[in-house]
Image (cartoon, rainbow, N blue to C red; front, top):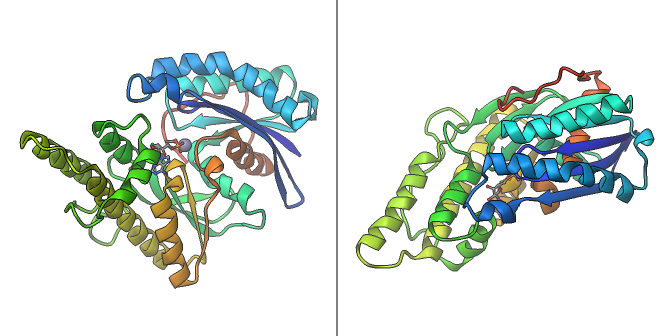
Amino acid sequence: MLILGLESSCDETSAAVVRMENGKRQILSNIVASQIEIHRLYGGVVPEIASRAHIEAISGITYRALDEAGVKLSDIGAVAVTSHPGLIGALIVGVNFAKSLAFANNIPLVAVNHVKAHVAAAYLEYPELEPPFTAMVVSGGHTSIYEISSYTDFKTIGSTRDDAAGEAFDKVARVLGMPYPGGAEFDRVSYGGNPLAVNLPSPALSGDNLDFSFSGIKTAALNYINSAKQRGEEPDVGDLAASYTHAIVKAIVKKASAALDRTGSRTLVLAGGVAANSHIRRELGAMCERRGVRLCVPSLSLCGDNAAMVAAAGFFEYEIGNLASVDLNASANDNM
Ligand code: KG4
Ligand code: ZN
């Protein structure tokens, strides 16, 4: 069956057509219109501007996705839309567009959780992947660990108590003058420094838990920058980026390993925008290899926000009959 996916939870408007049948998972089109250039002027996402940009883009993007896939609306078996969590004004645009399209054309509608969609990107990349497994979602809004028992059942076993890893990277990158969103540039710059040069607190919370806190490391990095400036010196950007990345990656690997101990899973899925980080991919890969666990990480284009992952997650909700109706509402909250 063909699923039309729609995504508008943050600063990417995306539409995709995905074929899901008989174990086959094929992306026919996946158009992503990024608003990054618009928000870069302000150093971060401006919610009101994001909503307006989604309104302007969503219809054109959707018909482009259908064209590129070589299909018509009448071929679509279900419309899947991200309904939560995210920026409420941005989500409302996608949800209302999807509702109108579905009901005007008599197509079933499915509401999708954005975090579940990030994990579903792995099903597109690894067609033979199936639950149960453990998943770690690291993005601009999330740093969470899930025990996944079926395509639709997620149990949260760990999460951040404050900021997400992506926010932590973006904040320090911004103070260092890197353009928004700084995560990818930070990744590149971190190769030019010593990962043990700056002493920073670990974002892995101590004790028998799978939780994180990024506020301490963020503040310590900002203090390092400010003290250098107060001495009339420039902070060593390479050393700071390398040390900051090292501390975050170490915490992620430590908690992922503890999660595998707890769940006994033989497969770990890494997903979300921050899963593009080269150090996290390499170090989690090494940890999984030592343990004989299979690591599944989507390719870079499926790590960031995109509608193909929404379509994939939507298919599994459709399969269990979890359909939405005209009274579907967007929600900023993260109820799984
Ligand atoms: O999943 P995503 O596209 O949006 C949310 O759902 O939040 O994630 C965006 C986040 C941003 O914080 C961005 O800086 C970060 O992913 N990111 C990275 C890298 N590439 C993107 N963070 C670290 N290293 C990267 N290579
Ligand atoms: Zn996302």
